[in-house]
Image 1 (cartoon, rainbow, N blue to C red):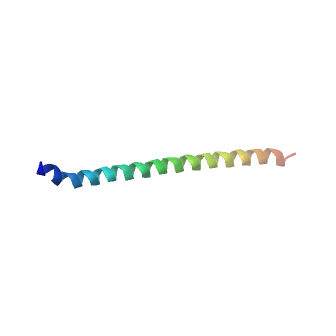
Image 2 (image 1 turned 90 degrees about the vertical axis):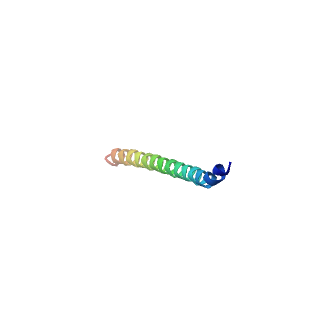
Image 3 (image 1 turned 135 degrees about the vertical axis):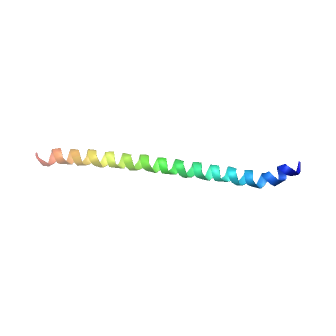
Length: 55
């Protein structure tokens, strides 16, 4: 039983590390998606503006 008490802090730190890394990767993925969407909108806006400027 005492072996569980010895391993518990390491297991806790491991779980904490897992959840922190998962949150970081999710935030990075969402940021990349938002950046891609903003670039798409900027490209559409620029393409639409370029078409209207000739008329």
